Image (cartoon, rainbow, N blue to C red):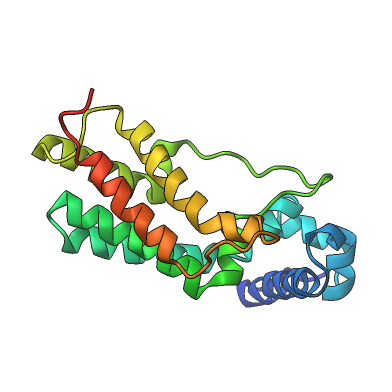
Length: 205
């Protein structure tokens, strides 16, 4: 006799159980000791069950940080709506990213600094024009260019430059922990000011 199909609630419970198991293993041992088999054993399900809910281990790991990242993007949407001035809007958006990195250190490290171990398949890449996080920044740059307050240039490339500078200033003390770098947040704040000044140099070649 075939086993009765799971209800939607039972499916959610199983999915959450798998995610909780993966989070526990990651918290206790790091990414190098995670495998689908280990997660299945921790969750008390079969390996096949894990794969029925998650395409691969990379998708499972990324799902652990999805909710707080979505909350960050929701905050960014609110900030974008609250600031008509592109200069002030971009400053607020970069500030939100810095605050997120400082207030949610563990999530930031795993969602934005995650280094994929060998053996874990890379997640599928998302086109920049379909990513809400990137598009909020790009729209702000475009609005600033139309208003004449931001320098000319390809908006997508300018966003990548701005995010690279800000992200690098945040992550450098983490990745080069052996060096006594300033990790107080002062440098990223200075970077925000520097990037705003650079973008505002509308007469640059």
